[in-house]
Amino acid sequence: MGKRTRATAYLSTSELAREAGVHPNTVRRYAESGLIPPVERGANGYRRFTQHHLDCLRVACLIYRDIHPVRGIRSSARPVLASAFHDDWESALQRSIAHVAFIQAEHERADAAAAAIEAWQANPTTETAPPHLLIGETARLLNVTIDMLHNWERNGLIAVPRRGDNGYRVYGAVALQRLRVIRALAQAGYSQMAILRMLIQLDQGELVDVRHTLDTPRPDDDVYVVADHWLSTLTEQEAVAGRLVALVREIANRPD
Image (cartoon, rainbow, N blue to C red):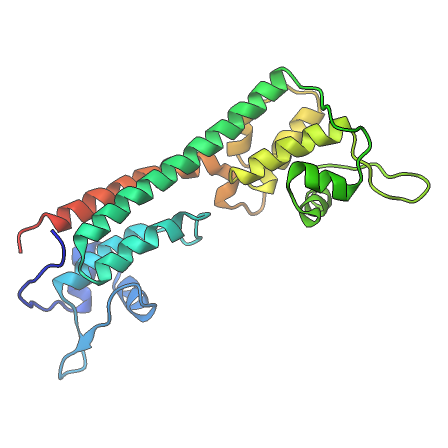
């Protein structure tokens, strides 16, 4: 494996699109965006694509198949395409396997966070920190920024009481427990909307199916993003990454 050599056989835009199973406009867009290697033009001005372009296009289509980038996942996959650009398929294969491992780690982190919230819901713990912390003290205790605490409050994830004499926010045991839940889920990749859905049900005294609630946008949500159904997204992306490995391995093992 490694860098390949091959005889030159040119493909037109429509032929390349047909071989890759995409629309010709997708080929043009990927070429103009630099997602496949630079393309020579013939004397007639038409693009002259090669097998290398086709291989890179098939890789790029898997990496850029989603309109909206998925948290960290596209960045993890880009090195695979970089190796493909250089026709180094041994490196591309190693990087595609590393990409699968990255997604699996993200999935494990998301599962672990959901499991921790399930355990907390079944048996809430008692916070042992001082009962009336100010915002700076709370941020240091939880290892988050003050801006993050403001943001969570602004988006309805928590309501923080204030001291009557000076109006400063004070964080008690219940607030600290809630903030630990928010922090764990946010760090695991769940969106604020997904976290809010779960917290609303908890506040209503309902027994929450944590994973279902975190993973299921409400029917009346006008707009939602992939992190609003993060567990399903990770399951899907893990399958896509597996197809990427299979594709790169097929190209790497193909006879010259």
